[in-house]
Amino acid sequence: MAGKRKDKDPVLGTKSASELIWLLGQPHLSDYLDFVRTKVVGGAELDPRVLAAEWRTANDIYAQLETEEAGLADLVKTKAIGRAAKSLAARLQDNPWFRASFDNLPYSIELVELDKLMVSQDHVERSFTKQFVRRLQAMSEQELFNYCLPIDKPMPPVEVTRLSGDRYVFTSPSTDFRSHSPRLLRPAEIPAVTSSGPISAFVGIAVGFGSNFLSAVRSDKRIVLQNGYHRAYALRSAGLTHAYCVIEDVTRKDELRLTADDTVAGDPEFYFAARRPPLLKDFFDKRFAKRMYIRPMANHIEVEIKVRSGMATAWH
Image (cartoon, rainbow, N blue to C red; front, side, top):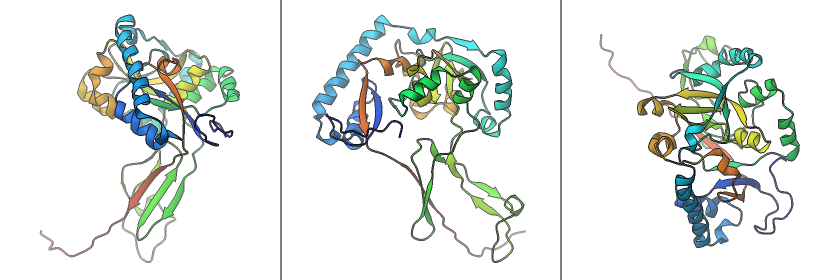
């Protein structure tokens, strides 16, 4: 399977683990130490002082880059999409997943330079093979567009377990696994469902995945990557310099809170005002990028149904 080690690792002593790249030197040190201790194979036996020292060294290099590469994030380049991609973009924008994801702020679909994209996520899982990299290198423009902004994509596996009472656990290996907003449905919307009596309505919580288009947020000259970290990393690994991306434009903090992840929305100055914020290219710099092997993990969503009934006075 892609991204899995099948041979014994000489350092960690594992037979099977997923490869992960961690960006050292970025907030917060405690997050890094906790992750290594609880998630990395053999991490509990590693000396926290050694881990803190390597993180501190990377943090010092970032401090140097505030002078050497000041303003580099402001130089990120974008390109307008070509004629061949415009019909693909039109089809994409007709998709209901797309419309629901980008329904409140101005956006554009552009080719964005990968190296100078700011990043708020401190790790990526390197779950691809050399054969996959060669396939990326040979992609046509249409294939690249669909890889970055997929409409038709295979669904990751999901297991459903019923616990005691009306409790259910949904499990998937996908990091994009999530629950969606509750919905009120009428019988005509689910005609195949039968019951012991007439049905008035359904209340449903959908469990599934996000649209997961490669997307970013732009403020002034800077662009921070939001979704599609693994694809961006894979494309950069294959030597590609640009990727198709949906870019939302924000001009104030209230707009940023609508679209940015909690890390960016909670500290916008770190990304949009710092002289040298973390960039995607840092994942390929040995001074910052640490390779680790993590235990297989799965994401869980637990749903519990509680129903209360009673009588109340009807006021007219």
